[in-house]
Length: 232
Ligand code: ADP
Ligand code: MG
Image (tube, rainbow, N blue to C red; front, side, top):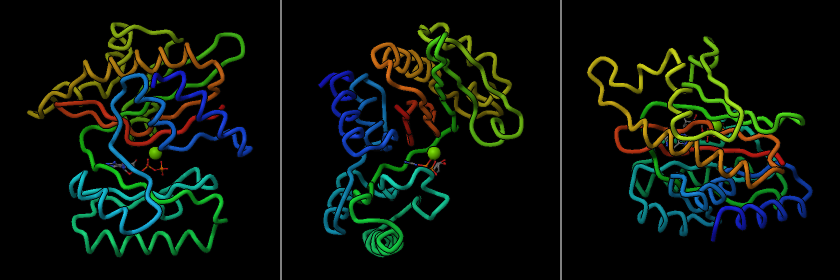
């Protein structure tokens, strides 16, 4: 299914559930429809299902809470990284489920996402819709670069891959992607593709008010979305 059709279905589900917030796994479903690389993941309801999924994906894996009432997952203990074995997975799955079953309604709780653990430099992609100018895109290096140095670049959508490259070159932290201190150069081309494909999605989906892809991991092989939210 193409991205636009996926998005329309997901947005209408969100509206039916009276929320303007599109969940991480739904964002990833939409992005896949635009050929954007996202972490492999399955939302699981039971520990047995989680074990099967983890075996298919391969350890280490990541667990994340999936609830319509949780926007910032790690703030409330809803992200567990680097799970290395079936035993560890079972224990952490039960722990997370117990933690959130008490806090939230059963309706809000959709399950626990079992996902691929990825690595690389962390980049953030942001989008804000202005009523006059349309979608403004932002890219920056993750962590302290954004929080402390405000090291980000902006362009109005739509943007091409070449324009995405210009944005990245404006970043002080670009050196981190470019083979800094003997590190393997990151696959910057694939990050530029991601940015221009996000731009295509924005053109087709004017109802997006805000999008936050944070983080996007970029390594020598790929640029892959590890977390995302959309507000419609
Ligand atoms: P939050 O809702 O708190 O933003 P995230 O999904 O972004 O939750 O997870 C928190 C942090 O965990 C991320 O900023 C990233 O550093 C790390 N992380 C999340 N998903 C993955 C993943 N699939 N592989 C590796 N690290 C991840
Ligand atoms: Mg995040």
